[in-house]
Image 1 (cartoon, rainbow, N blue to C red):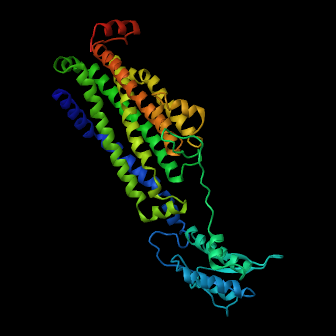
Image 2 (image 1 turned 135 degrees about the horizontal axis):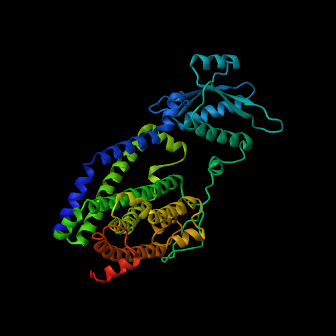
Image 3 (image 1 turned 135 degrees about the vertical axis):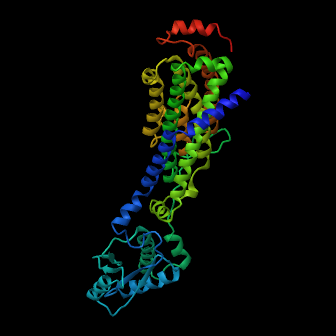
Length: 432
């Protein structure tokens, strides 16, 4: 165990100190930062919508053209003042015509003005907002809500009480429930239940699982092959058992991967907490508090298990290759398996209840991403999640045992890649 710890520490320090790791981590962190801030940069260069810029705490001033619609204008002014909304302020100057309001907008006294245009056969006019620049949806939404209340008040007049008007004006939200239930009998959400923020989280986790597994897996295989081709392996094999070597490298590089994920996670969290990015999330009706914690927890668990499943296979393949030039072709089958897992999850993220995704949730090579989509959508019963976990753990034990036997015999086989017959005969002679 002490020797394995030494290998873990040596592998971790050796990889973290390399220029390739530092450059890759910095470049990817910068790309993530730029990608998350692209909407803000576009808004910044375009001047941005009124009332939507970061740090803009000044309310938007909206004038009212109340000609022939004095009742509507007065009710809107009264309601807006009572609400105390800080995003906009209604300015009702009954003495100004449209030309005067246009002049106020051009001079900057107003950000825009509302004109109430009569509609034939209807008691309520059509409101039109005129402005020289686009006004943020964060301002438009409360104005529309206020107009809805005013419309109700104008149409029903005094036939309803204030409580009845409030009840009618409250939006109705539809809650969907699936007939499928988990072991506890609790209903799970339907396939349309994934919120926008959880959709983004699941999408990012799938990409992270794929890229991290491929990067660290190839790192494991290339390091083993490089040691074997330089004959260093012959020295190492005499001082440390092959099993300690293999799992020491796998755990050491796993820690490197976790460090990189932690850095990227901190970069994403730091950028999403910036004021202008919080505004972007609110524009898309996304709230970080709505993130499903189960997605994050299970995502981490399935990432760890999925990593070890693919890592032991990469280590086994790397031990069978004598030259680094042959490594790309040797690991191609594992790469294809990982791509299949990635594409099944990505192309099924909008339809998490399809049969393909359900079946893939119980296949160890595809379950880390497939089950994550179903967890994010809330359509995976608890028993299915734990069954998928159990199958994955058993698969890791089986493939880990096979990989250890292959590694023990493969690292000392030089020249051409051994055939399955040669490998099988050599594996039979080695007892774990």
